[in-house]
Length: 157
Picture 1 (cartoon, rainbow, N blue to C red):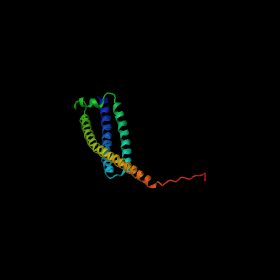
Picture 2: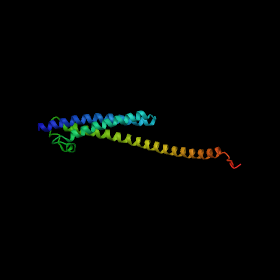
Picture 3: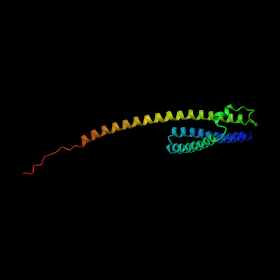
Picture 4: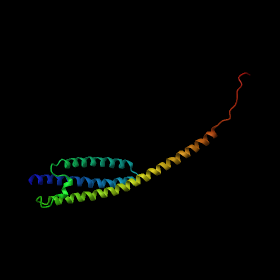
């Protein structure tokens, strides 16, 4: 029982850390979207890098969670609240619920950002095609204008 309680406390602490990181991740998702809208690509790249570091930290926490001996996140919902004193399981369930809400929020923001990126990409491709066509047309007319009439030199005379 005491061993289980210690593991639950460890799981709770890991979930708290993960929630903090995910909340920061959600803030970064909003920053990413605003950087894209304001066309600040240096800031956009910086936010992407910060998000990657958070993802690595979250993955590390997930590995710690998977190493708990008797408890894994899938089993947390099957534990009864009386199984462990101090209502740690209830707190763990709340943390998991908050994590889910945070992930839903991040997903919504990321979907909007992805749609904006796709729209910008298609606009860029369309503009590049128009530029390429204009360049080809300009080159065709310039080449004709630059042509000089040729002449023939007879070296026999």
